[in-house]
Length: 130
Image (cartoon, rainbow, N blue to C red; front, side, top):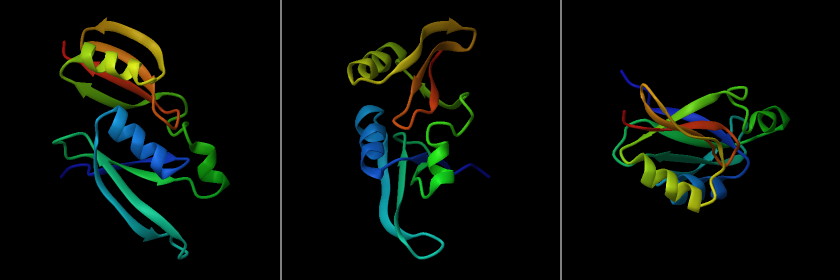
């Protein structure tokens, strides 16, 4: 048993794909036409960190209720965790790409950590080894 996908509600597909692939270095696994439950067109967009199993389903907000959760899927908490081998290099690359960090790097018993916002405004921990 494993978790395959986690949904991230975004405003638009293409800027989200660009952020996750171009800035974070994820791979675009799927981007295919699909339909909403009531038959309207949408896209099925999946990105994953290279070599990883669990991916993100990038879902464009559909209606006011979903638009309201863009960037607030976990009520302002850190809800996503990206572990990297070379924390300093990845952090530096992300800063250069314009990623907004809301907490600067610090050392914790579990490793280096800094909090950043994804394109939708969700909080992520960037984590490096202990």
